[in-house]
Length: 257
Image (cartoon, rainbow, N blue to C red; front, side):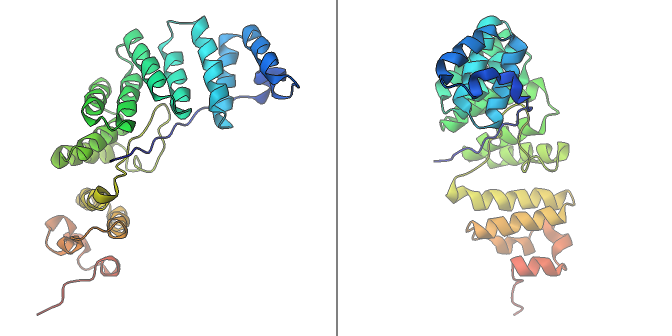
C-alpha cells in the first residue's frame, strides 16, 4: 500500500525555557511543577525545543498544557496535533487538527494536516477531500498542491495528480525536496508506482525547461524499475534533451535500424 513521507520544521527555542526539569533527579515530578508555573508562550517554546531534540512525548506534554490554558487557539491545537503525529498518535493528532479547523475555518494548514493523517492511514478519498480544502483556502501553497497530487496519484487518477504537481512546481520548483514549515508533506512511496511517478514528474520538469531536474527524475524512475523509459525519445516534451549526451547516459538511445 502507499505510504507517506511527512516532515515538520519547528522554530528552535532557548533551552533555558524548559526549566530545571532537564536536569532534575526527579524529572517527572519536577516537569509537572514546571508546566504549571510556565506561561503559554513558555510552554509553546519548550514544546518546540522538545521537537528539535526529537522528544515528541515531551513536546506533546507541553503543547497539551498550553492548549488547556488557551482552548480557543487554533495554532496551538495544530502544534499539539503535529507533536502527536510525530509521536505516532494519529487519531489524537487528527482530533486536534479537526479542532483547529473548526476554531478557524480559514486555517489552511489544519485542513492540510487532517488530510495528511488520512493519507498515513491509506484513506486516500478523505485525504484528497481535505487537501482540496487546503488548496481552496490558499491556492499559493505549493505543498498543498503536492499533497493533493499524491492523494490523486495513489488513487491512480494520474492526470489530476500531475496537474497538481505541475502547479506545485510552478509555485516552488523545490517543493518536493523541502520540508513543510507548518505541516506535513505527502509523497508517493509505493514501490510499484514510484518509477511511474518519477517519469511523469520528469515530463513536467522538461515541459517547464528544468532539464537538470528532469534528468534527475529520469534517473530515479530508472532506479525504481520503470520499464518504459524509451518513451523519452518519442514524446515531444523531452525533445530538448534528445541531443543532450547526459540523456543517453540515463536512457540509451534507440538503435538505428
